[in-house]
Image 1: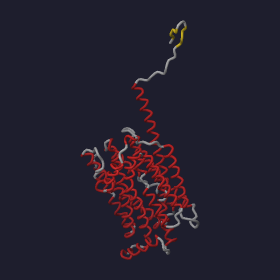
Image 2: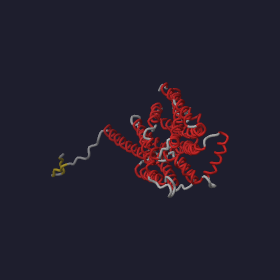
Image 3: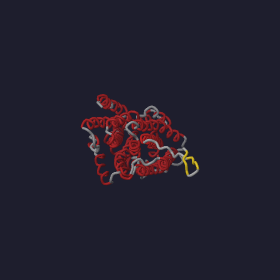
Image 4: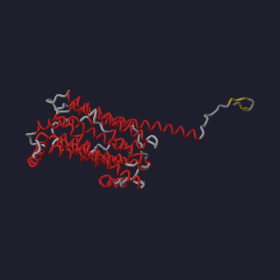
Length: 412
């Protein structure tokens, strides 16, 4: 455009053309969508790294128990002290001596899940006050410390302490689900939850196989048994910490955070099994929604209670009856991953919950799952120890019919 300035003609430069309000809103929305998609992708990678490290120990537990039995059976140690208590009870029941390691393994698995059940709602509440990212980094640091201790576990006591620290720190999974909820919309939330389920499925297939391969190539006469898979798990945990620290953004804005005193009060509802099954801590639910979610919660708990126990003891079954090696144990997990069933029930819960209460619903389901995984392995290992594999799996398979029928009849 030309304009006169005195006797001169000056060419006027055009400034940047401003977009209409609607176009600007669309651009902002597209940018937010891309950011949220990156956030969910980073959560997927974080879960994958964590679950790879977590699942590597699954096929190794029977051999680990045998290792500590050989090393500490005659010593004044934690293992020998617990063994004396178990054998005193064994005289009363007449259970076979070769199943003692099953009971030990079941107790360890239950302790890990029970600690997760206690800490997950508390850490989730603290993340409502201080943000998701700081609490997630604290959890991942604790998990890395547990893997470091495992790599140095020449005694059963150190191994138990490592598992104890790992169980206390395992609230990272519920935090990742909260981040997905923060970073997604009604339309994208199902996709985000599907990625969470995919991370579980891939990890429970590949992780045990990796752990078994590392154990196969380890020298059990030199240093702690299972040192190499523990060091590999430690490497994955450190990589996970770096990923979260440098790539994952904070998804809970400061203005949306709740006071600590208020959020800690809510944790009582996440610890009481009765409150969990009735979704007491979840607000803004209609009577019909609460009724459906309560039934779904019961189905979710029953399924994981039975299946986690059967899944846990199957490594001991193949170890004692079929003499499976660690590598064969790892290959077995290629066909028994259960994450798809859990993901489907989680998606049903997320779809039934209103937007403002979806995070609380998912947190409640997660707590129910942790409680089931705490009680299931201990009870199933006790039945296995006392009655053997045939009765244990016959009873378990019959009970699994109950949640299947209940889910089929559930009207969502």
